[in-house]
Length: 232
Image (cartoon, rainbow, N blue to C red; front, side):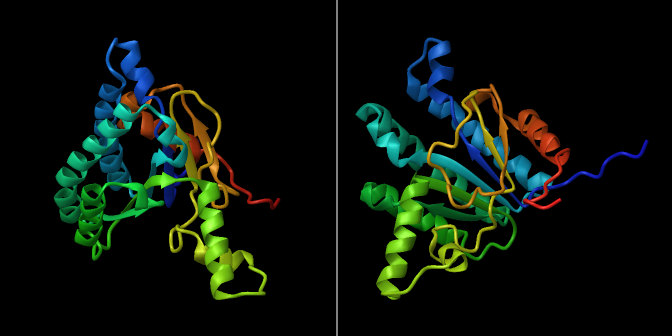
């Protein structure tokens, strides 16, 4: 029997869920789950590069996450600052271009500076793309796109093509595959416009335990699906 050809998605997006529950199951503070989750980010980013995935996007912090305890949010920023500082030279060396999408205006000056420096450091890279969604939501993206269009084109109607141009994800292919960890089966206000024909993969595995083998399972499941895009 002829083996089915492996299909490599161009763009994989991940909702990284379950850090807090991972820590609580072990009697640890929730922030420890976020620290361990960084290792999963590194492992999945490396595997995406090895597998030939051109775009990997990660839903790291939503607009709704501001409702979490203040100490957890501050801990997250601390982890993020440290991670960005460590990973930037590695991304540069591996020819990976970093993009950060979302409304970063609420972040501290120090975090904004770190993000901008890392993005600029990798701006000329031409290999794969790592997209980190920070203070992002699908509704925010659609609203900011519409508002920008209205400002530039008053009294005109926006088309689908123009919407794609004004979204924060301009120039990035729509996700072929969305992975969500921790057993939740919803997209939580994430890339609402962009996921019209995205394949979904839900797993019970908590994000800190989602490493290369689990990523490989998701990609194999995707490879076995038939995508019709509304056609026969």
